[in-house]
Amino acid sequence: MTENIDERKKKAFFSTLIVLGICISWVGTTQFAKSSAISKGFSGATFMLYISASSNMILFPTFWFVKSYVLKHPHNIISELSKEPKDLTFTSIVAYAGIFFVLYFIANYLHLKALWFTSASVVNAVFSATPAFVYVFGCMPCFLNNPIEITKVIAVTFAVGGTLCFYANAQLGYESVIGVIMSIGSSLCAALYKVLLQTRLGNSSVSTVTLLLSLVGVYHFSLIWILVLILDYTNIESISNPPWLLIFISILLGLTYNFLVNFGVCYTSALFVSLGTLLGIPLGGLVDHLFRDVEFHFLQIVGAICIAIGFILILFPLKFSQINPITPPLSSSRLLAIETISDPET
Image (cartoon, rainbow, N blue to C red; front, top):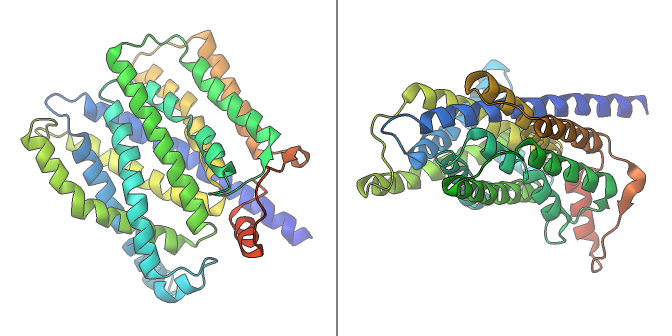
C-alpha cells in the first residue's frame, strides 16, 4: 500500500515537471517564431516547419546512443516493441508515423502561419482551447471512450473561459481574424493528434515515443522540401534572408516541446499534458508585456486566475463526479484496451 502511494506521488511529481517543461518550451518556441515572422524579407512558415520538424530525426538516435553507450544498457528496439502493451511492430510504428505526420504538419503549419497575421499572445490564447477538443475527442466511443467527469468539464470551462477573458479587449481586424481561424484549425489537429497518440501508443516506453517522433521527422525531411521550393518559386512564401539564430533557438525549444508532449501523453494523459499550453497563457502574456510592450487589463488577470483554477481541478479530480456515457456494449478485449489506455489518476 505504501509503495503504491509513493509511486503515485512520484508520478504526480514528474507529471507536473512535464507540464511545466511543456509550458516554458511552448511559450519560447512561439515567441522566437514570432520574432522570425516579423523579420524583414522572410515569410517562410513552411521552411521553418521543415527545418524544425526534420530535426526530430535526431531524437531516437540520441536516445539509443545515450542508453547503449553512456548508460551501458544495450538497446534493441525490435524486441522492446514486442513487449509494448499493444504488441507494436516496427512496421506498425512506421504506419502510425505516417498518420501522425499529416496531423503534425497541418497543426504546426497553421500555428506558425497564424503568427504572420496576429500576435503570439492571440495565437497562444486560441490554441489553449486544445484541452476542450481533447476532452471532447477523448469521450467519443471511437477514441478513448473516457467517462464524463463533472470536475473535468468544469475545469475545461474555466480554462477556455479564462483565455477568453485574457484577451477580451483585443481588437480584431481582418488579418487577425484569419490568424484566429488558423489557430482554431491548429488546435483541432493538435487535439486529434494527442488523442490518437494515447489511443494507439498509450503507456508506451520512451524509446517507442522517440522512434515515432524520429520517423515523423523523416517523413517531413523526405517530403516537405518539395513544397518549400514550390512555395518559394511561386512567391507564395519567401525564404530569402532567414533569421538563422532565431530559427535555431525556436528549433531547440520545439524539440523539447515535442518530446515532452509525446512522452507526456503516454506517461500521463492527453488532457493533462494540454495544461502545459494553458499555463503558457499567463507566461506568454508576461513575456509580451516585458519585451513587446503589451499592457494588461483587469479581465486578463481574471483569465489567468481562471486558468489556474482549471489546472487545479484537473490535477485533483473528484472521483464521485463520474457519469458513464451511454454507449453500445463492448467486448471484453475492447474494455481491456480502454482500461489500459485511460489513466483514472489524471
